[in-house]
Image (cartoon, rainbow, N blue to C red; front, side, top):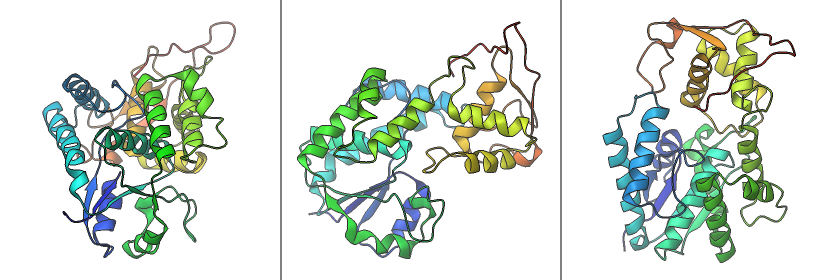
Length: 304
């Protein structure tokens, strides 16, 4: 049989896992599975094409569609051969980003009859406060939790399929039910779904929670991207599901609204939604005056 396979969600965590001394191959999964067009379970070619287009748009063109499509196909090909590995260990965080990815991978593995899987979901670590995820841990710290892994049960596979369907269909009714599940087989799912629900547009402002926190930081005097990021991270409750790319996309979306909520000044018209595109220190973000409509402040929401 092939060596052990460790699947996780972030490059930083993946690099630390590779240095942890735990035997086996480390594979990092890339996708934003709580958002964008897709079908539940194993994807067809149309689903992969749609996701490649969505991710290209989500990164402001920072990642090209052809590269994304190649990466997605390689990921699913990896799953088809995972059953040949001597051991499969899934390393995930308790956040929205990771939990939506976890249930999808479990659903895809079940589709291929790969049922001998172990799971490590680390939702806290002594001395690391606030704890947002595996990317904060050093290789030795990751090695210290390895013995806490547990075999994925039949109930967890079945539950993952239900949750993956909810994310794929953006099913608000099902989300509402899952968010209140006190006995969830994957106990981190209800909180992750509640965070997803908080990201839905507020009826009055048209803003989700992350956009609201970013706008509050900007109106509070934070003008540089780094300071906005720090302010939003401090105001949000852990575990943090988003990173800088996601936050820049939200700020760009607020600049693209009609009327715009913020103004972006810098070497490019919008914040780079992929690393290495521009020097973030050269950008300045300011809020624009709120527009009264006689009954208060009103904003027209544009889905980004």
